Image 1 (cartoon, rainbow, N blue to C red):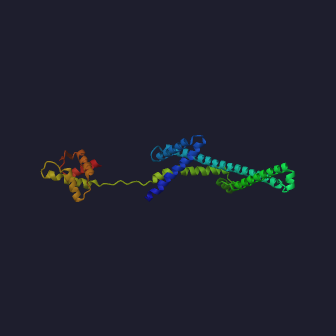
Image 2 (cartoon, rainbow, N blue to C red):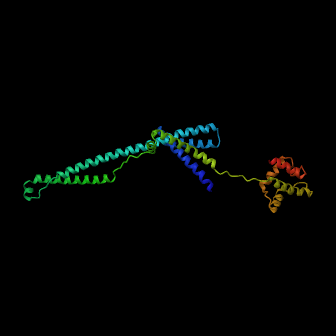
Image 3 (cartoon, rainbow, N blue to C red):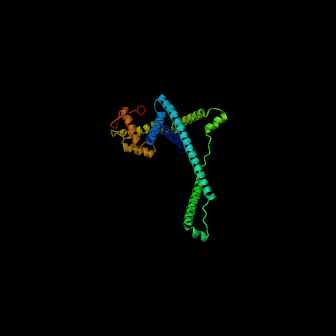
Length: 294
């Protein structure tokens, strides 16, 4: 069982990665996602099939095609990540601006609050003005509560965007080689490995060894057992059931199938016809049957 783990992993993971980056490649062309996935599956299966059987030049051509397209798929996936980070940056900037606007409005309210007098004389003398100020005060307090609530909620979900250095930028910084060239090199090598994973897994798949049958002793026993009735003067060779009975009793590996194979070879080799021996010499008979079996 352990012999199957590594080749199975290589086949499954290699095929998945091939299809995944084929999908990104074809999706960039505007191909519907389902058709992009099916195309990736078909090309991956084609590559695996050619690794087992097919023209060598076509196999190499498909590998080159796979490397070019899956490396393009890696570049497309990297670009999508860049767009996602840019979107997050824009969203974070918008959040920061909104928070700043709300804080300015809150500060303006706190700096110039509406004051309501508590004097009974003033409230009675300026009844209409007092009611208006009370309503304005209530509206101001309500607005301040809304602002405070929004600020607390937005601060909790504030997106922190920290620019990340890609692996290509890192290698470019330490080596001095342009990041684009490093990206092309690493993605191409990775695509080569992806393309070879499944074919290598197929070649590593354990071969089931066939059972090697030593036919000569079986043919010799079959001949001896079959000739018992003939030698007893019964006019024909021993029946199938009796030969199989002898074999079972002696522990000889002749079953119904092998009996049929040997009898057919004997008839084809001109040794037997209708259970009548045409060749009576044991050694010659066994030799002719063996030549037919070979």
